[in-house]
Length: 193
Image (cartoon, rainbow, N blue to C red; front, side, top):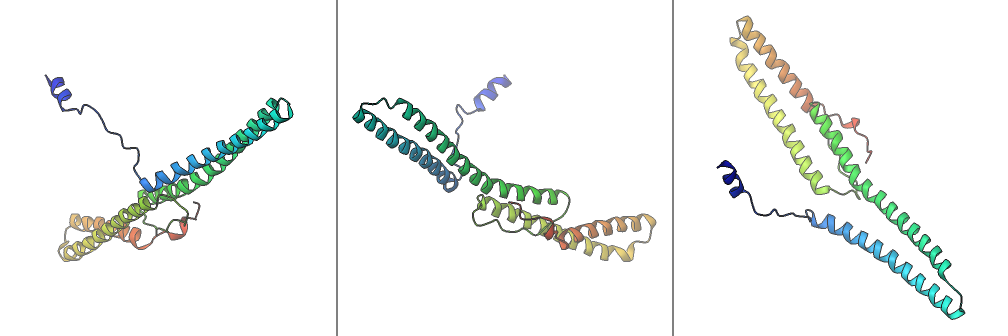
């Protein structure tokens, strides 16, 4: 009977959203379509001229068309390859920088975040990432302040060895949190993007 309940609660179909970031995706969809259409259009115009010239002169233009096709294919491959390099650099650079920040965060450090370059993509994602990063840093600072207040209140009454050991543990935790928040590692991350 549990299988019947599970089948009844599952949706009959799942919706897929392909356009998640309209501005970003449409920009590159249209750019790729334009490069492809432009290169095919240029090849078509050149092929038509070779054909018209061959027909007018009574010569077989098949070999010329074959060479033209090879050059058109190589030219389109080079153009799309260069575009791919530029595009992936604009996306992979910010992802690389953010992965360095995540590694620093995992190590308990809070470096100063630098803004992305002018041509970089994923700016809205980086803004959200920066907000989350700042909130985590602020939470650590708030916790350090709370630990400081708790230690100040407990210090006069810590008379037993166990309470002094607990106070030392709190002090070590406070020191670690203050160092992580107050000493950002700004020079550690080079602009590699």
